[in-house]
Image (tube, rainbow over the protein chains, first blue to last red):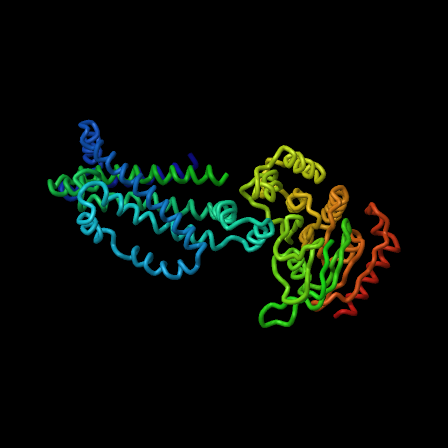
Length: 245
Length: 245
């Protein structure tokens, strides 16, 4: 690990120590701010008892499905809108409006349409992941160097060949950056989706913990979400580095 | 081989950038086009390539009018325009692999071209790992891999240092002679034009002002650059360019 990495770790440990001291020293109610040691105990108990595992798996499944679906549709939409300016002019305002609508407000509607369970959460996650991929793919396809396009014209490449053998590989850094953003947002989408219409998953667990005033468990779930989000982001960074070698 | 008759081209809102150009090239000939920046050289080359269509006049290759880029033409741009995500070998084979799978014979030809350019050891490298001169060599090999009857070159060595430029000029002459390709080479360097060409045309304000027949023996050798005849030809071209202003 580099020196800056060690400093970063040290800073984290200092903050945790300060939090622990403040929570115990000031005798704050665990309902308001439980000490990190209590959060850790709740976390370990949750995993040891098998209580947390199914919720983690449920959210993980929704994140993976929503991320895959939203990213794929965003990428394909970006390619389509990048290639057909008329479609871009007609559809883009509606796509922007669809992103401006708060996803939490959409959740009750999706439950009405799709029922309870994982489906509305997957749809919300996909909706959140869709836009970064659409925007980044669209921008990448529109910024290919004109001389490269002229080269492909000179080589008598078809439109499909120009897309798949020039524009997409050329835009790979921007498209992968979109995936990196989307994978983080996927966790937000899944957890927010579970707040309203789910009985399983980490979002549903936060609501349940709130109902039973189990603040240490709420913090424990937040720790799990943070760690999983961080792992998925780092995984995407690793994939990006491998693909851009 | 290449014939241009009364070719004219105008960008909207501007006077004709190419105006009534007549030119003919015999098979295997190397012709250069010199002129000041903005005189219409590159536009004339793009017209010859079929990348743009003349508003008047006729351009033909053999007996066929040039309506679009032709499979028997190769084009080398001002910058190497290589694809960074492909290896040197795959860049060279691109004109073939865009239309069909590369056969063993194609691979052998690409390897031979790279060997002639002194790039065999770099076949698996990516373009960003190469120097400017090496990238220009790869671009020439790519243009020649389909064994084009006509190679069109748009100031491909303009950004290189003098010694690298001379090396590349020798490489180009050797490879084109081996393949029997004709070359139409655009440059603003009069010494380069005299060294490479059988015939040099002078262009000014969209018109061809005249031409000089280069009677230096082939194969060209670096020592010829310092002979009185070489200097006399350069002086003749310079005078013609000054008249055209």
